[in-house]
Image (cartoon, rainbow, N blue to C red; front, side, top):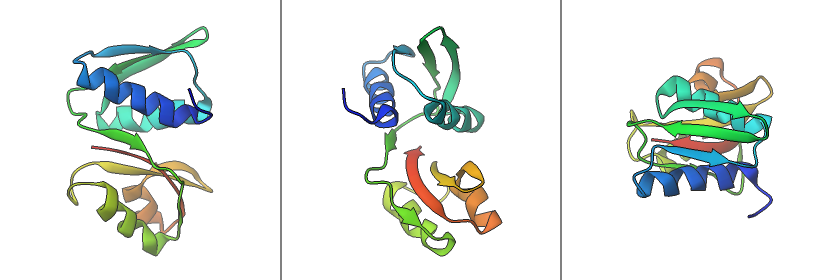
Length: 125
């Protein structure tokens, strides 16, 4: 286990997906990870998640093909976000890149609409 809770959690989600499992339990979690899962739930990549004491139970969705944390977390201005979208997503209309901005976590679509830059955190497709 590394120091990056988000990267570990997204790797475990992908390992469960490759093993054809739909549910997994994460022992380590943070509010930052829960916010990322909330965005992915809104987009349909995660069916459900809930905190049960110190454990986080996650149920993956059928729409999920890949998810990964982006390391290092690149700082991007609003006009540079599309460069990272092209780098990490297989198609323009497929998937989301999650950006941590001064206004909170949001998808790259919302960041482009609001003309806000930030740190590139993860992607789902």
